[in-house]
Image (cartoon, rainbow, N blue to C red):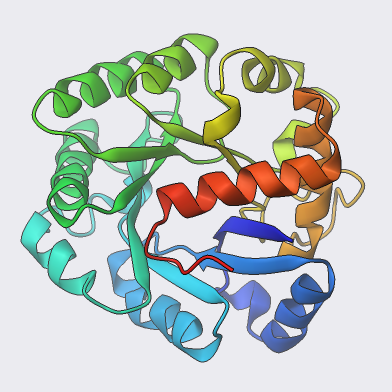
Length: 260
């Protein structure tokens, strides 16, 4: 059984067939899913999905693209929302200097607020990072010095240097369908050499990043075994070992989710 640690199910792409998508995931061996809040205004829609399905949990957070939408958000407000019984993590949050949809200063402020909330609530922190390796590593080290928190480097495609610095802080890492892409040798190398075997989990990030052999299709959680196959090849694991190791890591990180 696999666990999809990052799905985006509340958008238009799943509006017409969500029940069928969930059933296909279960049939493919996906035991649990974590549906992600990337925009604070979407929390009601995200949490409604988690409430509807017994095998889905959710998060509360604002993607760096949306840092500008609520620059005044406080850690306490995030913590209060996180009291929802299906919320098991803070995020998605982080830094994205590639698109720059939010000014850097607002990204930094939002990210620090999310870190504070995750630290105080003792919840995992789901981190997005793109084209911000040095700033991300520096900020993680600075914030960890203020008090421990539990970072997850979601859909990791950044440098080996950032991976090593984050790993020293106890970070977990998530492999997505990108690990199966033909031109992703650099990503595979980082997961092989710099990502600890006991701190790696898997995700689809659906509806994005469909893995081989599903490239070009809308990604959905039922494609997770293909991601696991890609990670297993990198780690020299059997598929069964990959399922066991990534599920164990998921439960250790997301300890509010009941283990089955």
